[in-house]
Length: 382
Ligand SMILES: Cc1ncc(COP(=O)(O)O)c(C=O)c1O
Image (cartoon, rainbow, N blue to C red):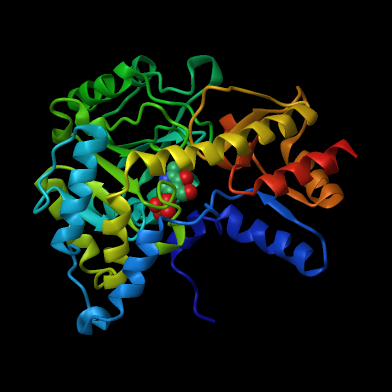
């Protein structure tokens, strides 16, 4: 038996990879499972996107390797999207890199900037991939607590009282997953100043900016942010294209070329038709965002009803694809969600998988149809 690398001892299989096997086994055994666990958009992407990939098969070069940096038209479309939506200027030749989803970027950025032993600030609660990738590259994950009382925003003053001398990278993610909290006007400015004072690279992971959010923001809109920040974004949630695997990272040319150095050694370009589809998605008008959010608003109203029935509390001002809810005092979230899974065939995510600060919370996904949500309500009522 060949032993696995030591780094694998530092991480566990991803929660959903394990739990969805259990959920699928229940489904195969005939249970009418409704999955409110995972944030995988079930709505259709724009029709123009589907037409573009279909059309792409007519071209002779479609099956060949593609550029490591993506098609120039794709980089231009991404930069003009950032200009229109966030008023951020980026040079398409050097300040953007298309990615196969923003998740891929988490590994590439970590490989580009972290040495073994470097420290990385990670939000608690937060997306579990930040910590697992940090461990895979043999850096040290140092969590910073977010809590409800502080609007789930980092306490930078408290952080600055700690020893930050070994910290190289800080992960920030607003609109925040799992809580849905939004960054305030001043938070990004404060983060940029904090990064400059402490020589830290801030990575803002921004894939939820267009879901149920009236005020999409980019950290790169702060003057001077590019000196110390890069930002990840993605088409997964904005255009219902999670399975297409299209994301992007923006930053200054030096940071982007370091990330390209990693990426160009890992894959050999994004499928041509996917790039053509992504270009069409990025051209979407305001109507796209209005329709998308109208659909999610209706779903969220139903999820709020479901949460009420389960005795949970929640904040109605949040953004993103989830409803983050507090359980009644003293209720164990994992036992609670297992009871609902086995008694009512509804799968909900326990907050603890996002870190200790998620204890006592559960997360409902809005990636289920209104009919499924109504059915969930009926099952709980009965
Ligand atoms: C906070 C956060 N970042 C990144 C991702 C990865 O998204 P993608 O790789 O599809 O762009 C997710 C996916 O759920 C997420 O919740």
